Amino acid sequence: MPVREDALVLERISPDDRFDADDVVYLGRTVSADADLAVGTPLLLVAQADAGDDEPEQGLEWRNPRDAAHRMSDRDAGIASEALAIAAWHRTSRFCANCGAETEVRNAGWMRACPRCGVDHFPRTDPAVIVRIVHEERILLGSSALWPAGRYSLLAGFVEAGESLEAAVLREVEEESGMRLATPIYLGSQPWPFPRSLMFGYHAELAPGQDPEAIARDEEELDDVRWFSREELLATDSEVTLPGPTSIARAIIDDWLRGDERS
Image 1 (cartoon, rainbow, N blue to C red):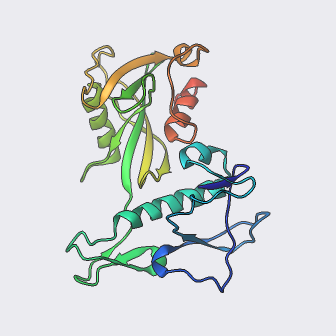
Image 2 (cartoon, one colour):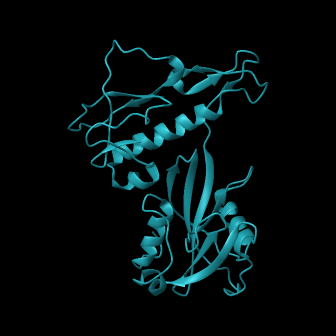
């Protein structure tokens, strides 16, 4: 992602510029005035496989969106999120899931049509839930088997077919930790275009009668699941690495660290 001084770099194009229709997606128009763009300016995503190969111009950097998005404006972060998600969908949807034929781009990049069987394909979003579980001034965090040692986050997982968000919270937590929860409380959501998720954040406490020490970890997915106090996570010599500042997981954990149980 091209960034200069924590701002997304947008390249101006002229009416004379020509691109392959399969490489362009119309992202919409700006709805507020900024120093660099007037209201109503159209935004296009132009896919360039080798865009990051050349030496960047003065002051421009290519950054991982996970590391840079939290320092961007709401506008730039929104543009980056939309562009990443739709670009990932195009990369993985070249062929029809119904008959296997190569699909064609339609509707300014927001649909792919199959010329053989006539099926229209649209961008997918995969819903996922993530939950802050607290009990007596402690928070339950897990460490994935795929992560570096010492990295912990909230328990999370994808919503299954025919499942409500709240049911997914209860199921995922019991599967991963053995903990039964009381009714989950919705906190907020975040698009997570890596490649196309929408994260729904929840807060929950243990169900009545649930022993907080009876943790039954999913040994295939998690290396560790345990309770942490605020003091443990805030200690200057803590060896725990929390999620990056771009993620909803970190926002939900930070709210709890500040003493806000329900935001």
